[in-house]
Length: 140
Image (cartoon, rainbow, N blue to C red; front, top):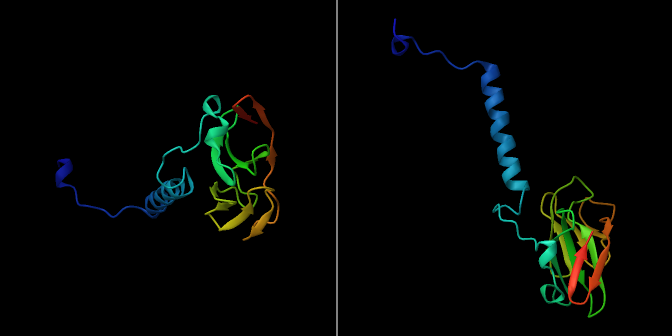
């Protein structure tokens, strides 16, 4: 009997569950990962300058160790940074003007303080160190 002559048998329950779990994991990673489009939109630490951060806005940046972070510039002299990991369930937080939003469960944080404004997150985003030398900014 050749392999093509064998009767077809349905996949086992284990094979179906394993395949479904793998598909679900892949979909979750795609949706919860780098902003949905797979592109890294953070500015590398070695290339970050004051001109990259408009006054009154938050931007995605990378820390000195390569971690994702959010940097907010309140005015010409005040810069604050927070981790880009939501305190609710670890989703990615992205900037939206003066707010930071986790699209996983829609938590919203104040970009100037990291305090939660709405959503299920109850704890503020952890702050990160910010150093400015001349025009160059280092986070982390």
